[in-house]
Image (cartoon, rainbow, N blue to C red; front, side, top):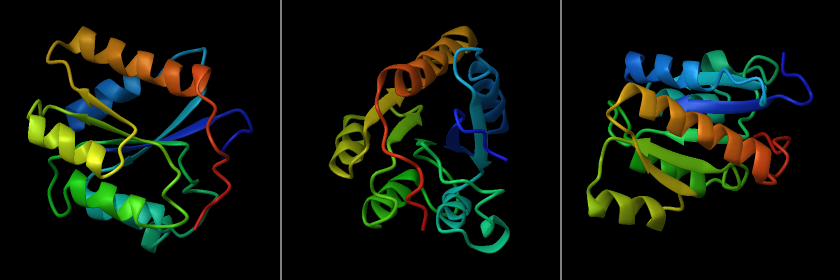
Length: 152
């Protein structure tokens, strides 16, 4: 169950290695993170819309932040981002694209679709962990976010 001062992050990432690195990076005493993982875009939308096994809001709390990979099976990150931004109750959740793509077209398209930030995953493991750690500190230590109580 989510604690009052706990931040919920939905990581939408199909790579188990990047999932684990993100989990490690977010183990920081300054911010209490409840990391939830969706392994593809379809699963992410099921989670966000509380469908199937994600139906219960107690076990699938609305995220305060979404970390979104672009290149995934079933439904890619661009499709997920467009669907989130087109949904009245989900559109205010901040979405940070966290991807290996450095293509200008991906960057422009992600911002056009409404991402709040675009971060290229560093190849170096230590740099990756540091980037994610800073991201968590920024979003939950500096930024004022809307309440996550606007669940679908």
